[in-house]
Each structure stands twice: as C-alpha cells, then as structure tokens.
Image 1 (cartoon, rainbow, N blue to C red):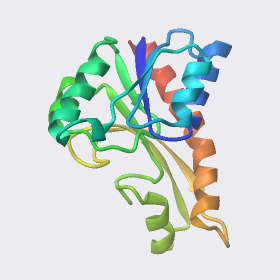
Image 2 (image 1 turned 90 degrees about the horizontal axis):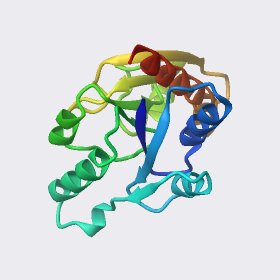
Image 3 (image 1 turned 180 degrees about the vertical axis):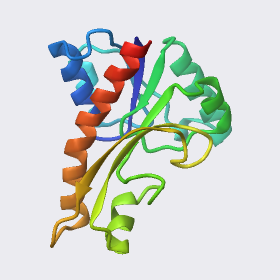
Image 4 (image 1 turned 120 degrees about the horizontal axis):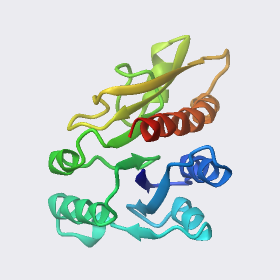
Amino acid sequence: MRIVVMVSGSGTNLQSIMDAVAEGSLPQVEIAAVGADKPCTGIDRAEKAGIETFLVQPSSFENRQVWNRALEEQIASYQPDFVIFAGFMRIVDADLVKRFENRIVNTHPALLPSFPGAHGVRDALAHGVKITGLTVHFVDSGVDTGPILAQAAVPVEDGDTEESLHERIKVQERKLLVKTIAELASAA
C-alpha cells in the first residue's frame, strides 16, 4: 500500500508511521512521499529518513483554488492508495477530496462529532467534558465530518491545561493512526 503523508508541523505522527514501517509493524506500507504546505520539522524528518519530499505553499499561488489543483496533482503524481493527513493543518477543497474519495485519512484531537475544527482540545476543556480523545477519520468536503475509522478515549484530569491534555491525546493519536493504517493495508 503506497501512502503520501502530509504534514504542517513537527511531524510526530509521521515519525510514528516511519518507525512502524522501519520496525516491520507496517510491512505492507510504503511511504511514497511526504508533503507539506510550508517548511517544517516533519519535512526534515522525512528527508533524514531518505523519503522523497515536496512543498506546495499556498503563498506561491494566486488563490486557494490554484493551490488546491497544484497540491492535488503533486499528491497524485505518487499514485498513492491513501493520503495521510498527519498534522496537516490546511482545509482542502471538495475537488481534491473527490479525487481521493475515501482515501484521505485525518486525525482530530477530539471524539467527533463533538468539537470539530482547529480547537478541539480547547473546546472540550471549555465545555467541561470529563472524557475526550481522538478520532481517525476519512476526509470529506466538510470540516471533520467524514466517516469515522477509529476513536480512542482520553480522560480529562483535574488541572489539565490545553497543552497537557493535548500531549496525552497525541500519545494515543500516534498509536491509533498506525493501527488504522495497518488495518487499511490488511484490507487492501
């Protein structure tokens, strides 16, 4: 199973995927490329591992539609079976989603459908929930509304800050993302 992994930041989810491939936990998975919307540590991690990388920066294009087409074509050039949004912090348009329908996998730091959007952890804390978690889901044309593939619960502890809770969610997120990719590979 060929995957393209998209990142925007530190690349810890990407690292968990690369580690799982390297140690044999994902024997059927090949990381064809890692892409990003800006220079970031995730790209550096991939380059150090000898994985091909690419940047498609929105600021290099006249508008979002042109950027989406460029990103779509760049991803498609690797002929991926799945595209993994591993901390990729951009919303892509419906045409890109349609091209890779039910093949773009995203993670979200809340138990969807609760607390969608960019501030899932902050919103969960503000709402006073006692249990939150994370969701691995397919991307559709909405924001965090695609079909759910897997979820894991994370308890909210007394005194949790957005940062402390998010760090505990990320630990579970890395495990669940790798597990979900393994399940998709075995079903392919």
